[in-house]
Length: 192
Image (tube, rainbow, N blue to C red; front, side):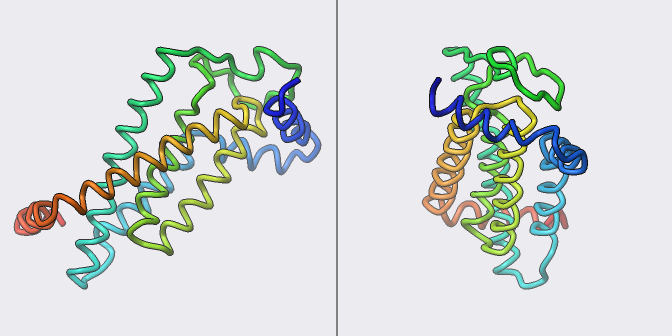
């Protein structure tokens, strides 16, 4: 048995013992929890300050997060097309607390998305980024706990998301002053 399977069985072995924890982590494992939470944070960053310089930096971070999650998802889909790894419930006797996704397990698309958003925001706004990073780690853990991802799936997805966010963040910095000019144009139409 691999280290990945052993770690998975240890984490997933915790499932089914505490019904309240099971329900909480099932809610966190759901894709919608993080998407809704992060959208609220992104909206707060986009519109949340009157100080123009900080608002512009926040808006660049939101653009970076949006681009990063799209590109990271593309990388995951490319990886899934080239390599199929079955989900843990298809290979091991587990405590499955979630529906059975039919797409490949490796790399985790949800981990790529949540870490792309979290790291993009972390690079620009430490407080909001740490909050989103905490949610991303919790989401990744919950996906293992409920039985739909191996730890390596989550780690690979997290790496894809984080690396994509870092590269897009650097690209936005390299393209200055164009991102700032674009935001200035958007602000003229009261959209920012």
